[in-house]
Length: 318
Image (cartoon, rainbow, N blue to C red; front, side, top):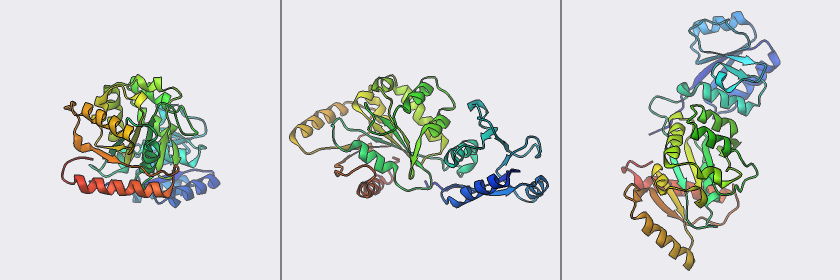
């Protein structure tokens, strides 16, 4: 299914003209951002505009100045509590954070009806030093109309940023409806990937059950915010093999040495007894030895995705 973005128009009413111009320029200069902004510092002109044109959202520096049927979000000069983020946005946050807040506010309007599907991708191997994380990062870095999400469930984070997953795990366990907005707020943007690194202790991820993962992945998928959701799974965080069955595709990095081959054979024998696990979702790969974020790895990941699409056309797998 194609993932086409619906073009949303935002009207900005802001009396601080320098801020207004900067915000409009930032929004309209990003071709991947599915909003076009029009701005007014004069309230009368803003009201005249919405009489003649349809807008998806109004960002306003004043309350109760637009018709009740319009969707209005207040540009607040003070930090906004999470429970008020559908009605208010902190105006002085970074451009990236502001865009994330707008995605959350307009989540039902951004994507065309029926086109919210995300690819749920697992990268997992019982083998160590096999390029699992590097390949996961490359997958998450592939271009697309939506950003991709990289989720690290490793025993130890290999990234500079760490500990971001701890708050998410709490939200999952408590079934917080705001879990997706928390992911967006905590994730670090790098190219087309949103990165959420592992907890400081793998014991945090150990508490997540099959039901927890199922609920969390469903929330992410329903949001429609991400093109690919790439889960980098470590051995210490996988406490139930049924979790493997929650993904539409699973890349299994392998190695060619004798010990690794024997270990993999035993692992696959174990998997053969799992009736709920469709063997068609699993694809073995030999990851080239490249540094994180290298172009060669991205090209390799793109090639493997193309191979997957070709091999699984008509099988109903995503």
